[in-house]
Image (cartoon, rainbow, N blue to C red):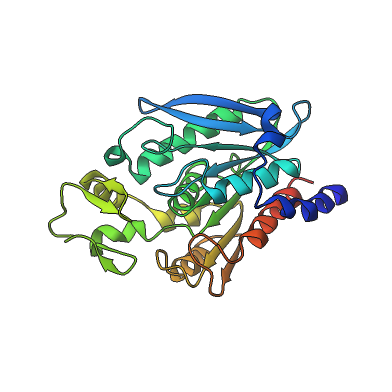
Length: 277
């Protein structure tokens, strides 16, 4: 364990570098089916001969398995002896599906598909679910649904619980995006991602706080109080709902954790290693 923590101190030096070549021999591409869509994922393993903890990484809306934060997390975890699976949700990256067919609930199905796959791997010691933004919201919903027996550890980075309220207000990042009484046939999020009324309809069905209250595994949650997309009050509500949560609200930090990303990743790796001694 001490050796792993010692390696952790060295691993942060690699955060700004691509470690793809370093891990190429231990990477495996997998394609799974979810709701008729082919989803593309990458398994990265530090050692193919031993039991290892596994972290499943869930990216945010409009992101991908190769988003900088997700890739930096994966590379650092693998460097420290932890396997990862990172995949593209439906309508994202290399995976099938139209953007306008994607909703939070379809992403819940996608995440469960990869969890079920991971549970069938004979080298997996435990599963930790880590999600950013919409992926963080999905991670919390899935953990509450499946329970701590299957998902004993959960990490959320700026979990976008605000999505469950957007359909009421029509506001995103403080801006009026649409009229909630008359939703458009399609609207564009952050000038790039196309969402449909189905996304809004499914957001009405999301039970964020009920899922959090049901979950009794260990939780580590990071939130910046300078995040313009997800107000810090949502993190405080999570803290009240969870039974066993370490909630850290970072002063001045934004939605992508650009100011403290190295420290956040370091703390996540420590969390995973400590829980898998």
